[in-house]
Amino acid sequence: MNDFIFLLAALFSVLNPIGTVPIFVGLTQDYTKAERSKVSFWTAINVLLILVISYFIGQYVLTFFGITIPALRIAGGIIIASSGFGLLNGKFSRNKGLDKKAEEEAQQRNSIALTPLAMPMLAGPGSISLLIAYYQEHNSTNDIIISSLAIIAVAMLIFIILRSAHYLAKYLGASGIVAISRIIGFLTIAIGIQYIISAVLSIIEEI
Image (cartoon, rainbow, N blue to C red; front, top):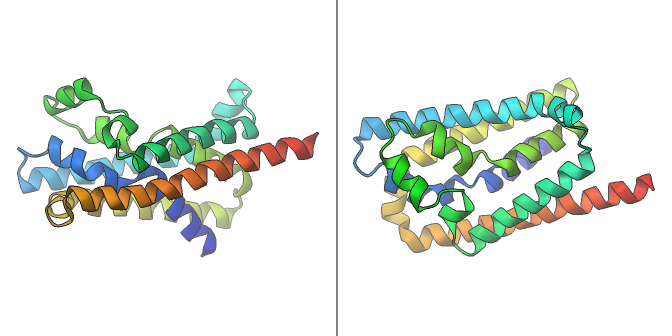
């Protein structure tokens, strides 16, 4: 249960669907309620598939390119911490890889569920590296079941939050969303720094 809560909290902090709310509202402002629900559903499904593939296949990618786990942890920690700083400063769009040009292209696209919503706004390098590194230390049958449930749970939360995005934006307001995202950003920075510390300690122990 502790592992489930830890991975769920870590993924939720790194993915930060709350910070995606204002962007989602902007991209779907001309959509009907049914269309928003459909986009929310397929965004959650796409995120689920990306995270599951990263969790189970990521280790083989590392082996192919000769990347060690400490190197992945350091790189992932830097990305995660950088993402957290972006949230802490309230820079949602830039932090999630969505500049003005990309946003304009997204508004002209028939489907935005995969790009830019699922990737890179939600499932980005930070969450992918987190799952790959997590699998290296938690790969028993029980761990895999717990991790899979945590990934499914975070995908469900993403669906619920995006489906309610327009209501959240209305009742929380811009200041409320910024406040919540800054709290999540602080936790995300802590997760990134912890990954870097773990990698450095692992390297020292090997020496």
